[in-house]
Length: 123
Length: 123
DNA sequence: CAGTATCCATCTGGATACTG
DNA sequence: CAGTATCCAGATGGATACTG
Picture 1 (cartoon, rainbow over the protein chains, first blue to last red):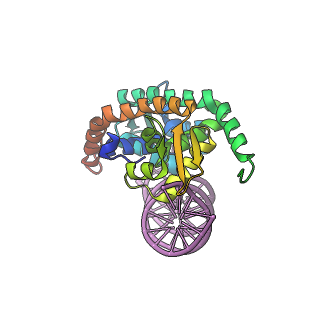
Picture 2 (tube, rainbow over the protein chains, first blue to last red):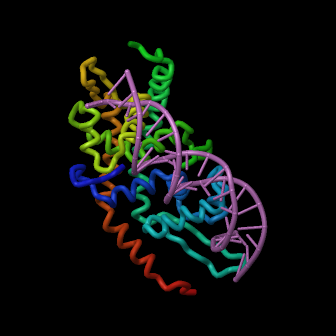
Picture 3 (cartoon, each protein chain N blue to C red):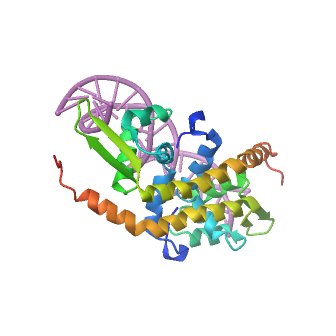
């Protein structure tokens, strides 16, 4: 999405939507819904995520103030992540969109089938 | 976002979020908020979009049943796009997220500034 | 355990030229 | 006017190896 003045939207909105739209952000936020979790715990919970991408994703979320990172000076090291109050409001809002997607997934699939089975050039 | 059984989400949700998260979809849907518009009209309204990406975006939206495309057999050709009922519900839902982004943009900016100006390794 | 560093394949999308 | 076709640069993210 691009945001110009005629859209009555700002560039910052583009930033936020890029974040929410990326491959792993919502999964991470979702997994933190009930409280804090450790790095490896998150990695196990999110199917298919690489160590690199989990690091990249939680760092971005931390930078944006959506997730708080707590390091314990133990051996072996322990790092906990949890949602900030702001992160919790994002989870709540994004969930509306996930609900929409879930509710209309079948309808969209049917539309795609119809589109893909249309005659090549009707007229 | 990746969606496995433990996430209680389906793969179809990933599809939908990929669509909403892409660069132009929400801009196009937003520009169709008040009714039908022509191809070139949309292109002018959406700052920075290329002809190719407008075509790609409206085709995908049409395929998903979110936008309806009407071709008039005139010379020069005229093609109108408008939101379907389904597309209108998506606009409404996505708008909540845009509201969130707008509301918290400043807060996120401040968090980023704090993060970027932290001492390198506090210990 | 919780990372970082590096390399690389794929995907996205921009620029440009052409057309019914 | 409303596309399509082609090419290509940059971003995204996966695999792997290494480390405090």
